[in-house]
Structures are given as C-alpha cells and as structure tokens.
Image 1: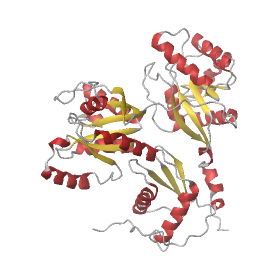
Image 2: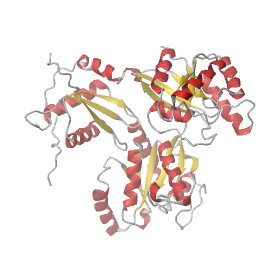
Image 3: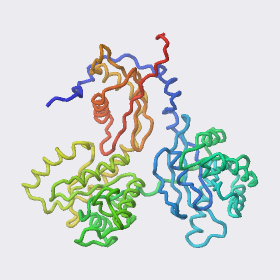
Image 4: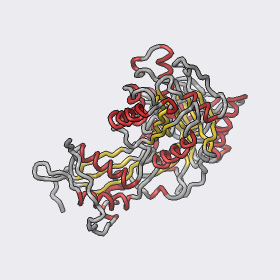
Length: 479
C-alpha cells in the first residue's frame, strides 16, 4: 500500500549545524509564543462576582476553550478552579470562583468563602458585574469585601452585546472601582481590551499563590452497559453507583472521590451514549449533553469498550469525541473475563482496523467484575496526564526538526520545496505546536512530523495538535 507520508528516516546520522536560538526568537515573540514564562511562579488572576453574571463564560473566553462548565442558572460553579492562560506572550493563572453573596448561608456561605480565599491568594481581581442589570446592593457589598483584600481590581461590565449597552455600562462608575471595561464574554466583544488592562496591572513578581491542584478529574465514558458503573464500584470498593443489566441505568454524571494506586482521583461516571447528541431526544438528549460536559470538564477520559463484542461505530464516535475535546485518553477493554482465544484474535484485527486514528491511546484489558488488571489503571492515567501537560523546550524542538527536515525534506511542488523555518510549542493540555514555514505543507507531511514528534518526545496517551503558519508574502525581496 502506498502513502503520501515520507519514510521514517534515521536522523541521528545527520550532521547538524550549530543551533542559534536568536534565529527565530524575535519572530516567536512577535507571534506571542514563548517558553520563558514556564519557569517560576506566574501571576494569579481571580474572577469574582455575584451568581450568574457570566464569570465562567468569561474564563472560557480568556483561556480560549470551553473548559469551565457553563449553564444559564446560578450556582453551577461552587469551588475555586484554576486554569492556565496566555495573552500577548504573558502567562498567568486564571481562577474561576462561585458566586459571592453577602449574608450567605449553608452551601452558599462555603461558596462565598472560596471566592474570598481566591481574592486573598491572587495578584489581580476581575470583578464581574452584569451590565444589563446595573450596580446592585450585592455588588456594592462585594466592592467592600474587595477593598478589604487590598488587591488591584479590574471592573468588568459583562453582557455588553451592542453599543447601546456599552453606553449604559457607564453607570458602573458609581461602584468606585474606576473605569468599567465593557465586554461580551459570550461573543468575545471587548475581551482583548480587557486582557490588555489586566496585563497593565499584573505585577512583575507574583505575590499571589495559586490553589494547590485538587484530585485529577477522570471521566468514565462509553456505550450503555459496558460496565462504567461496575468499574467505579470496583475501584471504590463499595456501591457508589447503581448497577443493572438494563442499559441506561446511569443518567446524571456521578462524581466520586476514589483512591487508586495511593492517589486520590475524582472519577465521573457518565450516562451511556447511544446516539449523537443531535439525534437523541428526551432524557437521553440531556444525559448526552451532561456526558459531553463531563468530558469537557475532565482532564483524562477512560473510554470503556465491551471486549467480547465487536467495536462499533458508536465506540469510535465516543473515542473521537474525547480526542477532539483534547483530553488524555485511556481505552479500557472491559469484560475481559468473557474473552476467549478466538475473540482475542478478532479483537486484535479490529483494533488495527477500527482504532487506527488513535494509535497513541493507552490501552488496558480489564474486568470490573473480577478486578482483573484494574490496578494498572492508575499508572496509565498518570502517564496520559504527564504527557498531556508535557512541554518541549524550544531549542530542543528546533534541533530535532532541523535534523528531521534535513533527513526527510518536504516533497518538491512546482520545483520548490517549502521549508520549516522554526517551530514553537504554543500550549499544553493538550500539547499544541506551531510550525512557521515558507509555504503550506502537505497534510501527509504534517502527519509525518506529528508521528515523529510522538516518537521523539513520548506523547503516548494524549492528542497533539500541529498547525502550520506559512510566511506572509510582503512583496519585498529577501535580505
């Protein structure tokens, strides 16, 4: 069988020129990519405000992906949740908080306490107010709390979706926090100007302390009746979730703190996905939405497949959903106690044929019923998460790519072969790489580069994204 991808050539024998980081660092800084902020602490920005003013939506806008869970009801966010953010080459930690209310009681009081702790441990506070409602008594009470904290505060007038509302947001001057910054977190309007204002008040030396990372979030997903709840109960060593032979027993995601391999994990048992979300209806539709949200909120997903049944189209769709969400992936073939020699042979052929798009996924053969190999789940999760957050130093990355391109250059098109000028890692979780080139690269060559990146830097268990940024033609001759 022929392929458009180049052969894997041994690059160890290639004579490398001396690598000079100054060849690309200026252009890299102009594009906003840099490794320099990875070392040492980064500033902490806390997002606070009363319930349902759009704090989590704003956090998603700032980090550039839908990770904080959002719903059009107050009280969805309850704890402090920290995310990595980048703007204009400056890295910082953004902390989402629950709604703050004065005189709160019971659970609302605990949520408010978490928000106040986030203020105390931050360098800058984003105070979010609903511009369509205007300043309220709760907002004024929150201002008094923020002044006691003594941290710089940037006032955010959210839900400003048009110029008329922008004029009305001027009423927020009355809060005494200075100029309100009108934004629409949902549509992105004004978010760039807001982030510029945040960078203006960020200290050079961070004084805040990010909250220590809590238990890693693991989503258990798969078709109905593949054994997700049974695996959760096996790992928890008690009945945490209802188990029945009837498919579809679990409807709502079930969060459980479980100790696996001596480490505490937050496992989320989800509803079985029968169909695409758009084709589901009734309870199944909402269960599918909750499962999709659980995948978005997780860091790693364990996709359970029924080992003694053929790999189905729905199994592949669920795996694709996890990969496209950018989550680390472990595929667990459950019910291994029911698999005989003939089925093992057939399964090996199915894996080769049906899962060829995710050869990087970690695979385990387990039995939730008997406990077979469930102790191997924790090492697989740690490996996937470690690689999911892996960062490759820019110098090492470009030395590797220089050798790779010299050993296997891009095929010539129209008498010319586009070159990779330099590359940088634009982010982690999952790892994202940008190749700056003299022209567009063939899709097959990009896949070849991605495969060699995986082999060289060990990205088992995590998707990686490789994008190409061709050099702009400005009409000037080369110097």
